[in-house]
Every structure is written in C-alpha cells, then in structure tokens.
Image: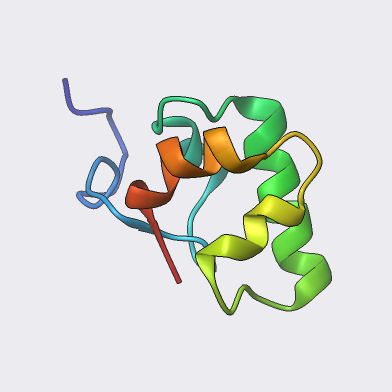
Amino acid sequence: MAESGAQSTNSSFPVNLNTCTAQELTAIDGIGDTRASAIIQYREYLGGYTSVEQIKEIKGIGDALYEKISPYLTV
C-alpha cells in the first residue's frame, strides 16, 4: 500500500502544481508519464503556475480532461 521511501503526502490531494513530482501527478487518473512530464516542463517554462487553469494551455489537456483532474490540483 504505502510505497517505500515515499513521502507521507504522496497520495494526498490536491497536489500543488508548483511543487509536485511526476510520481504525484501520475497518481491522478487521467495523467500518465507523458502528461506529467509536460506539466512539469510547462511549470519550468512559466516559472510557476499562478492558476490550475493554466494546464489547459498544454497540448492534450482540453476542457473535458481539465474538469476531470482539476479537483485534484492546486497552486
């Protein structure tokens, strides 16, 4: 159940887009390795997210997916 070496916050939601790891993002249904990597790369490009809605600017994250995953995200 608990992953060895994982932080206790690993499965707690929402995850902060500005501090989360790819592993934390992939715990959200609808986010796989490729999308998690894109979210982190875009965070680095922006210098940090100012709103969760900014992830819709990433290719492949449209309104439907945003509605599904946004409750699990925060900034």
